[in-house]
Image (cartoon, rainbow, N blue to C red; front, top):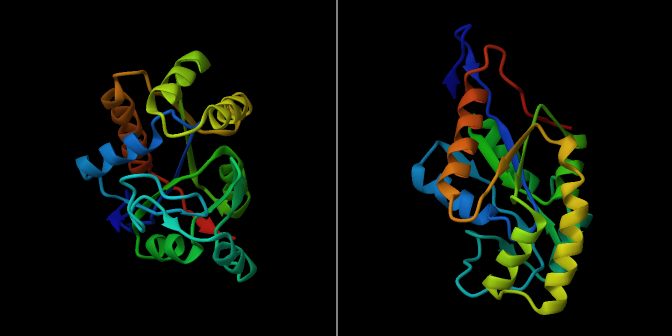
Length: 206
């Protein structure tokens, strides 16, 4: 833990990063890791099939639907939700353990999941990573060729709904094409500002 203004130890922050599919959340997190900004990334579990290059336990914890549902029944997730036909959720034990150790924790969660976290965690910080426009987002998704045409259409429709959730967030960072460093600079600035609060947030899981 880091000291705060009154000499006590600063509690760990819980930072939630959301945004529509294809906006660059994974790339932003990878850049933050490379900068070593002192934030722990809490890996999310999913039933989505693993994509080429993805590593179990690094990018996601990959489970079958049966395994995931068993974990849901045992209340092992901070929150969980269906996203694009697959189940996602961060293991609560991982998040709670890191916070109790005084670490700042970063979660990558979709808009639906972020709303659920807001109900369960007092004083979490919510950052929305947005594209300059929906048209820009569509172009990015079509370029990466990781989804079928039908999946892209579903993700585009969901993106419109997700953008409508912006008023529920504390911060918005626009990730312009080719300017990832600028977006990461702004996310890092948010984290720094939150660390410098005289009266720090206290992330408490209900």
